[in-house]
Length: 200
Image 1: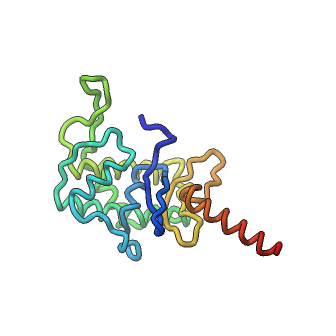
Image 2: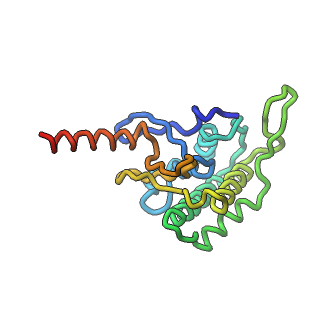
Image 3: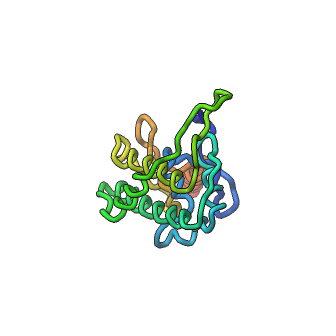
């Protein structure tokens, strides 16, 4: 299994600074690839190689050897957008729209990636690994999150210029930032400057 210390995606800020972001769930990792409405400008899923590259960065261990077709990339964008809206609804304490629930359920109804133990004793994926099975795995993770004990802990980063979505799995449930090394640190720097300005 992957270490908690290394879990998460490496993202880059608009200034090019790299930082680690752990949204706490596989399905929320997909939301970093773009989204509906104003998030469309961040779209990175254009072709099969893009979806495969996302899977390689994700918390799926090991990385599945995927055969992805163009229609499955469109399916990935559709699932991601529905999940994005459903997750945002949860942050407001609201229920997801029926249409978005239908998209998630339809994806989850397909067979998922099947884990297996290889002849070397290591974890691997059995059978065909295509885009539809990848999305079924993501959608089932979403069903578990949206209906599970942490559904009320889905949050949006508290920074005004950050829209990353995560599930707060910390024991006290007081996580505010997508990443302490990014938005959390920026908040600390601003607070320090404001204190010094007020004192001066």
